[in-house]
Length: 367
Image 1 (cartoon, rainbow, N blue to C red):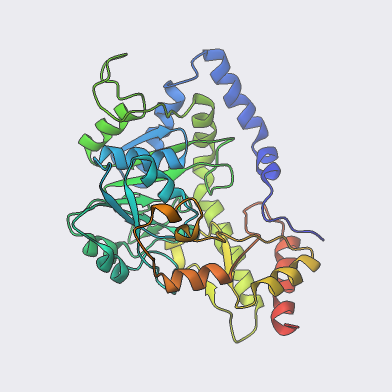
Image 2 (cartoon, rainbow, N blue to C red):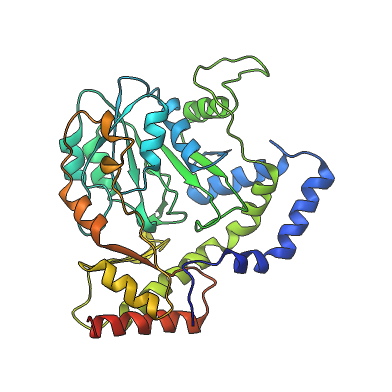
């Protein structure tokens, strides 16, 4: 048996008839941008997240860039973030002309450490981007306490539906940013994203900035605008998939629980989900001998990947822009050890059993 890391074809086949009907509805209406499908999704997703406003945009990285622009971040400013999130936040920071300042991560959750955040803040810090990595909410209480009056942007690209004490990802900070890339817990048929906020003034700025900075049509009222819009077909697909999100997240958590149960003591150092504050976007295990583990799983027919193999401060394109050496020991250790296993709602029981058995066998027979 070969178990893929993900298989988008299964979700497309499952939703095929509903997607075809949604696309036909858009085509029949003849309105492909800023129509009723987008309005319906924005209202539904804002309600789901527990925020007052949602604005659809082109993708998750655009969402982060627009969030920074809405907060007035620009050249000469610093934005604190983590270096193990795949360079997406860093891309947005650089796009607005600001500089990333990296803080280390918590060794247990692999998300932003509030203690490290407090030590990374400077008088030039204009915003903080906290990434809810692998589906797990960061320590938002600690992050917000450390941030003080500095606005916090949540990168929720991997955490659709994660919640703590009744509050969902995206509703903690000033702005929440989502990607609906097809592999996400809530995925579109292509690129799409959204920003959510409960601040009416920020929502107004974001609405203008996603369309050239327009106030009235063709009247550029705000500097820094760009073209980043969610189309009607993607909005329709997301609306039809949103009601199944919580069940799909529960399935993801159940899969990882099976992996945990299959591995005998001593349990390996998992980056593990805990309750509803983790939606198990990725099943990530840590091993001091990742190459051996990946090779053994490959022989068993289990696909794996690394999310993400190169920390941002080691990326060749960024190194010339850094002011000096960056010390992130926890980030660097984790980056060298992480390995992603298959975990998606459409996995069959046979596939889950096979991955769990292969993982257990590797840990029992490490040679």
